[in-house]
Image (tube, rainbow, N blue to C red):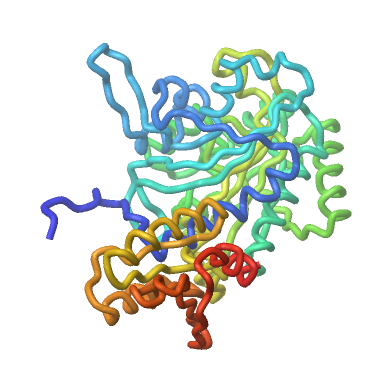
Length: 420
């Protein structure tokens, strides 16, 4: 055994299980790739202040969960705990908002890091696929992103997820609500840390999962009662567009989400088959984030869906994705001459777009055929000295067991036609 193990709270993705993760990433990103979203990839670490300003100084992510480090040059960096701030930073740095044609529509996929108690469905290293639409304030954009996420999950066969929807208001109406909420919260029996949060960002208290806190929150002022007419109209249009598209959602007046930058539309995808860690993804509008990190006013909206959580949701519904075999053709050489010739055939097949592998290192037909069976290939090419002398190889159908001779110079054409 190796001396080293994966760090606590992390896990390795290895075949064949890793194929499911790749399939989930592809399924989530597929609707984005056909809806005008371009791929962006950002560094795994950023300036600490990017997240402190954007995600929020009072959030658990910044105060408790970020992995931080100081470089030899004295720079304070953090492993990225979420994707939105990094993607917006990249778009601003590249002046994408000045190229015209707003919104800038981007999607991304990658690993993120948070130091928290490891448990099923919650790891210190996790994978997400996300999407951001930067630079436009339009209810249709909010609805589009929710529809695309719904489409992605349904393409995977998921049906038992729910979409929770709320509005957090804007800079006009939220301060009024904030003051009313603070007045209510100050009268509760809360610990010192939570009381400090009341003064910094009282909405975060509503997101507290502790049962004793939730019991005291009964009767708390609701943001919907404080929304200005503009926010009410905006939220009503988002709801109408989702309904017209046939997307089912639930209004959740207490939905806050855990990041400070959200405004107006906020939403969460939950799956009841995952127990207490039911959220599989979510997002919302963040109209002021660009200004928080030193950019111009760029109203924006986005989401991130957890790949790990989505895989758990598939398991909860008993869904097994149809993963195509990694290898379609497997080559078995019998003898040195066959080894040389079939290696060239394998290269030709790969260049023709056929997933092909070769029996390396095995000795004897029995060992070679074990390798072929393990590969999951549909066809196996077997060649020995006698076959090559006749200008042929044997092509075996691994499903039916049938075997036929095929002329060596017609092999690539024959195999590609059979696999078509």
